[in-house]
Length: 209
Image (cartoon, rainbow, N blue to C red; front, side):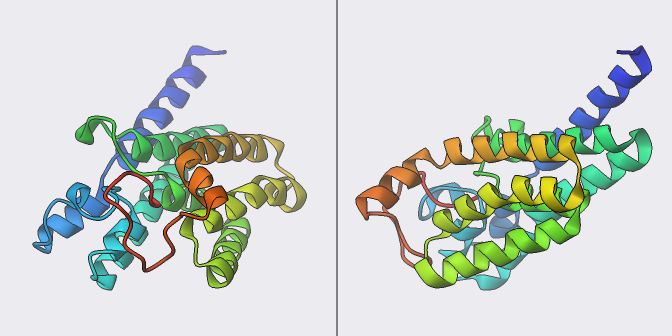
């Protein structure tokens, strides 16, 4: 790999990670005087746990921030260094959210950031992801099941409609990571003990992010 290309990919990864590691859930709840989000509900820094504070506007702001940080990472890297760099930046933003340096590498589960990266790469599949999430949530009221179903479909849809094998492979890898991050949720779903949307869970790590 040429040195210039390697530098570009490393720069894209650094950009994506730093943007992805911005903990919007923690920031907006503290600015609103709610307190430390990590000590509320499940302790997760994502949208679903912010919603458990009863502040829908803060949850909406968290969702928007966690999505757009990945979208911006993809679009900026793509513009500066090309399509491959955009994919690298999107993946790095996902892992930045999951393992943020500012929070001792204890972040969320990356669902909103995954969606934000999809928006930057190919927005029609991002719309399909959102539609699947909403549909499964409406039927089951399980946030985790919605995320699992949507992330399972996204790489398949990318390969089918975007005809971009690299993008499909990157998001397939991110989907595997997202499923692994949800292993506790999967166990609770199978046992019938998963918290439904709007229901307060026990104070452990397990909600969406």
